[in-house]
Amino acid sequence: MTGAGPALHVVIGTGGTDPLDGSKFATRSPGPLDVIQWRTPTGTLRTERPSPALLHERLWETQPVRRGVQYPNRRNQHGLYFWPRTGEHVWYESGLELASLVDLDYQGQAVHIAAQPFRLLFRRQSPATYHDPDFFAVHANGDQVVYDVKPSDRITPKAVDQFAETARICDAVGWRHVVLTETHAQRTANLEFLRSTRHTRCHPPTERLEHLLSVFDGARPIGEGIAMADCRHPALVMPHVRHLLWHHHLRVDLEQHLDFDTIATTTGRSTPCCG
Image 1 (cartoon, rainbow, N blue to C red):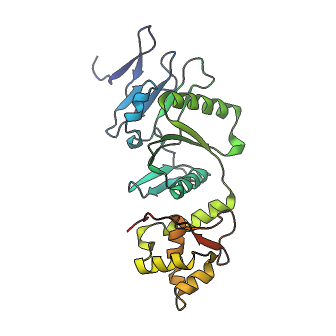
Image 2: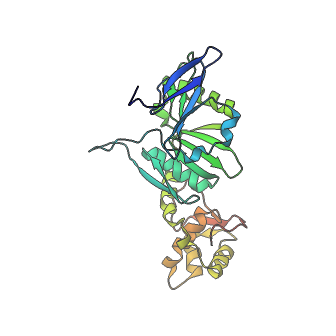
């Protein structure tokens, strides 16, 4: 037959093969067992069984399973978040996903991260048919983590079934599965305020860095500390303080309103955050 696209055949159990369309994602498993589908950077659609062999696949380089549709008056927030550890942008499709990415960035453990990385097709007897996790990350300690992001009031029985089946597949592979919901509202606002100074351009010069760490060594209000660092132009010091807070050289209570009266103290971090 001419004009037909390539077909991908996957062995399912011991009873032979079932065909899968090699050009698009399926919406249910082609047989009685779980499978995972993803699209490689070159556009090839791959289908594999969940197994520890997937730990060696570069799944943070996959193309997204889907992209949100752009239309007027869209209620949810779409966009791209710059991931500094790879120099690439990560797609998000809600304000909560953006807040989750900001928090993961601040925590500093996730090195590689990809949005909508693959599709999980659950075995036939499962209460759910398929699921597209929101993020896949590889952490600095080697952990591979599948993240789902969901507002707590939208975790319905259907979502619970999807998450339970997702966790089961993650166990079979060796991934961790984490469901992220809302964090403390003040923490979210504080991290949003700090993140604009996470970049190298806000890193203080060596002399000022040492001075700031000395100033805050005994814990003091931020306003007092920046005045001690530069009594003539304290406003010029604030981006440096925010940068050191983001990179964990300084510590505050992020669940309290962040202002000049906030008490900051050094953390004792010895490794540099940037040059």
